[in-house]
Image 1 (cartoon, rainbow, N blue to C red):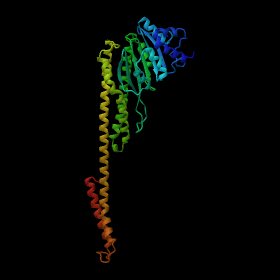
Image 2 (cartoon, helix red, strand yellow; image 1 turned 90 degrees about the vertical axis):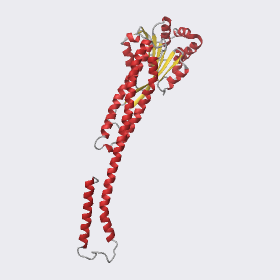
Image 3 (spheres, helix red, strand yellow; image 1 turned 45 degrees about the vertical axis):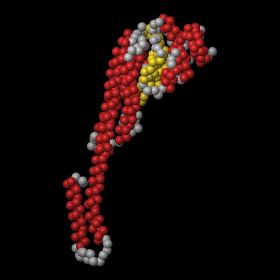
Image 4 (cartoon, rainbow, N blue to C red; image 1 turned 60 degrees about the horizontal axis):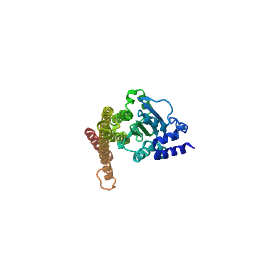
Length: 375
């Protein structure tokens, strides 16, 4: 039987015969190491599948059904399954095995969800928006500053399923950090949920610090000597990228607050104290984003004011020069009418006199405009 057919058979048996019958079937087939995508019957979406007991990784194979059976038989430890952008077909067997709600499964597969926290029976479903700062040599009107992804987390009494979307936000370093602290990991799946939330929110703070550097640079350019010539497209681009960051950070406030304050069966009260720390960091990130938004509005208004002042300055110069040029234009227009009986028309010094009068009038106007600051 092919691996795909074997998985379909496992899914069918879990629906009609329960987990024990699935376990009996899987004992008759070769064990599969899900940590290696190329050998996984679920496809390349499986990143890792590890069993933890007393905060320590259980050595041996990582067959999913067998791992769940051992954990539930002993009533100790939990399974952490990590996935990356799974398809409906790849996730179907997992949803049956862990009895996940169809709506939560649909959200986990389709992605593009707002940060939220939902409870489906004994399972907790959380959605986090991940962000990363896109490095660039120079900020332009088309520079990408913030890139976003998603992490969905299913938390039960004896399992954690993480579903990641996007090319950043890898949980490998997070897993290693938790394994280095067995005392914290021994607190169960809720400890993993807290670590993920803390990791995501810490990234928010790192990104806001990097965005602040871009805003500071734009502010310096706008208030420089030639600030009116600064490209306003950079300000609009920063506001767009800041809006993307705001969509990731602000909606997460309510879910983290619920995890920190409301009693939830799968979240131990001791873990809730850690979520309060995450909530504090999240509030700091939200305040920074709000202040950045106000600062960008002020920078944009200052830039528009500078442009208006520069335009008025240009208009005053144009008006002053037009007034200076109007004097010789008027005189030339009068003497260009070619009448016979015109003053000084046939006088020997008529032409030099007219030139002198025009020059003197232009000089008086020029000096007057210079003194008033128009030229």
